[in-house]
Image 1 (cartoon, rainbow, N blue to C red):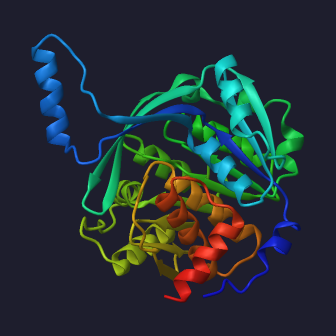
Image 2 (image 1 turned 45 degrees about the vertical axis):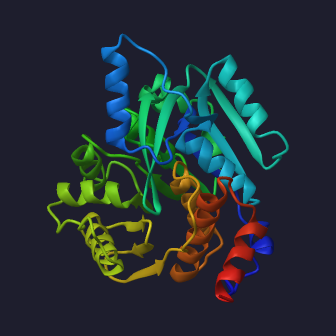
Image 3 (image 1 turned 135 degrees about the vertical axis):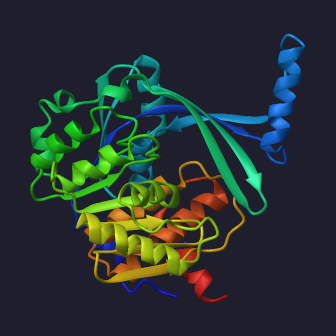
Length: 344
């Protein structure tokens, strides 16, 4: 299998992506074979006993936030990126350490408090599911005022990616400012978990509050949008055809390009035509952050002018490598995975 494009050469001829706005410090709690009911039972027992430790739980602390993860994934894929986010002194130190050696990323760090997230990872058969407990910090009110003085950065960008709209109560205001200042750029949004704000988000698009080129979502976010738009829901035991149908329905109703990424496939539609590509089958080591890696590759697919099938294939391969290895892939990693899958 081959992508049919000279990506290293193509990447030299595209501009930079501006990723905004969120930064979290994440603690990943890997629960392995412990079920949700088992964890709750253990916690209840400790509470009834007046407190205590549940030992033997693997944990790791790392940089997080959709914008930070997106910027890192873009950099690993040899793309240029400017990260606009908020951080205190400790957060700045962590980000600078994280991006050490990645000269293709510029950090634009604004004063404030980053968020904190505890991510509980459960293994359900062959799938890894995560439940996140978040302190939003100053990510919660990141408005247009935060972009003052950055007009030149925005106006010269090839892509503006506004991610985790849901966690930002000023998300629509931020998108309005960022997109109106970058008329030539690709305008990309991944809203993250829309729980409680689905109607507000859909209304902002329907009312034309900002010009949006690509809306990227996972299956859970798409379910919320579909419910808001009164479309046929995505079954919980869904097929590729179901994903394609939902993708086309949302795209048609909102009159924008929609990309959906799910564990079984990805799909894209402009409301008329659609394309879907099956996901790569790998043994998962991590779930948190896979969507950000998928988005990074998806954005590069657009900027490198890939056709829909090739773009989805590239994004699926990038996410699969991350899920399997728990690290963001390099361009060579992705190309090798695509080649090896084609030979199986």
